[in-house]
Length: 327
Image 1 (cartoon, rainbow, N blue to C red):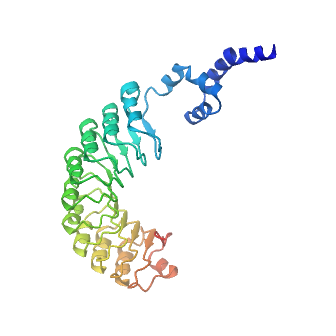
Image 2: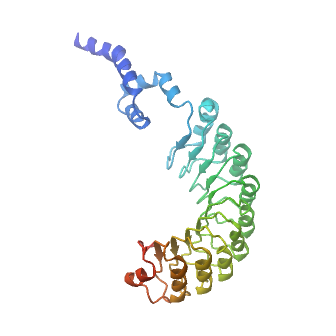
Image 3: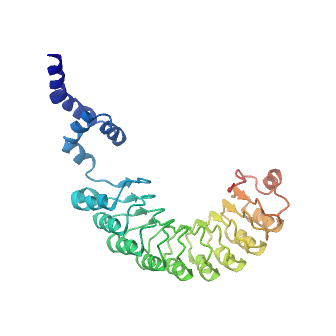
């Protein structure tokens, strides 16, 4: 009798109780309940209204490092739940290395209102994915292609042609990109953040064009081995620049850094790590123009700078809080 009573509870009462409780739970807690037991899973899945109401107008999906997400899953989004994601604005596929151009085509068709798209560390996507993106998603303002090693100048041409309101772009370690590609994407004059980390083959021919980005606030040039004082002097035209990473920009000297000090007087973050061609002279210029703004300054490895002790730097930059960016 007790067993029959328990069966009746599981079959009739438990689903009803779970329906009442789950309607008040957060998305995270609801998903945790799915994993609690087979009984919970079946009870929750049997209530389509619960999921339909909760996911009717999804605006953000974060699948970062979801290693078991395949193209087939993105195809299902397009074929089964397209009406629920048509308002999606943010999609994070970082580290989803099993997704290819086929999956990107499906999800861009399903989500035409995307503004934020991130697909960091995916070596399977090619320029074809960017072709699908610009065709179906017209309002991208944030784009992260870091580590997508098959992306080439063709993608940057498409981005430059189609995303005139792009604000943030990350093309870290996209090794196929050349000066021509970067020059094309710099037509996106609304850019506020540009990450060119570890793109060592670029030259001043492209760097000089960065100075046209009047709204630029963040620039990462770590490892820009061909950047000279001439290219850096052009970048000094970015008056709103707040953060500049010049780590291992080995051709830079005081001349270029002084130009940055004179032009970028709102600078808060600066890394000169590993640059042997700079001296105390550039620090004096930075102190003259940026002493009230700089809070992070890394001069480790700059053997030409003699005043590198914390107490010496604090005399020049009283608001300095971080002395080391790289370890």
